[in-house]
Image (cartoon, rainbow, N blue to C red; front, side, top):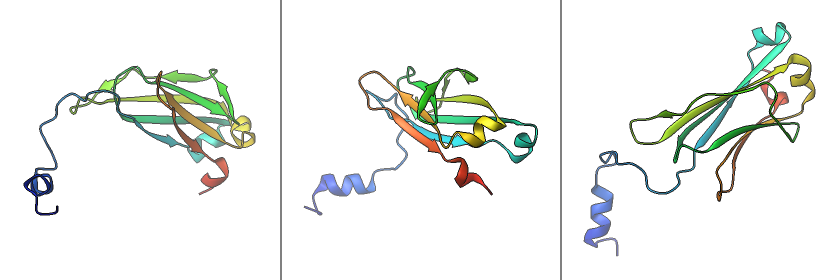
Length: 129
C-alpha cells in the first residue's frame, strides 16, 4: 500500500546514493554528433558517437553507413571510467562529404555479447540546420 514503510522509504530516500560499482550490465546511452557545416565545406565529414554510462567496459562501438557495417575511417577512444563506476567511450567515423551526402543514414551501434545492441541513427536529411 502507499502507506507502507518501504514505499515511504523509497520515496524519501536520497536520489543520489553513494556511488557503488554497478552490478551486472548497464546499457549505455549513445549520442551521435553530425559533422559541422565548416567541415563539409572542406569536403570531409567526421561523425562522433558518444557512449556514456555503460558497464562493464567491454561494450564495442561500431558504425553502420547506409545500413551496412563499416570499419574504414573508424577510430575508437579508450574507455573512461566515470565517478559512478560507469564507463564512457567515443568513436569517430570519417567520411568524405560525398559519402556523407549519399549515405542516407549513419548509425552508431554499441554491442556486448549476450545483450541486444544499443543503436542510435543520424539522418543526414534531418541535419540541414
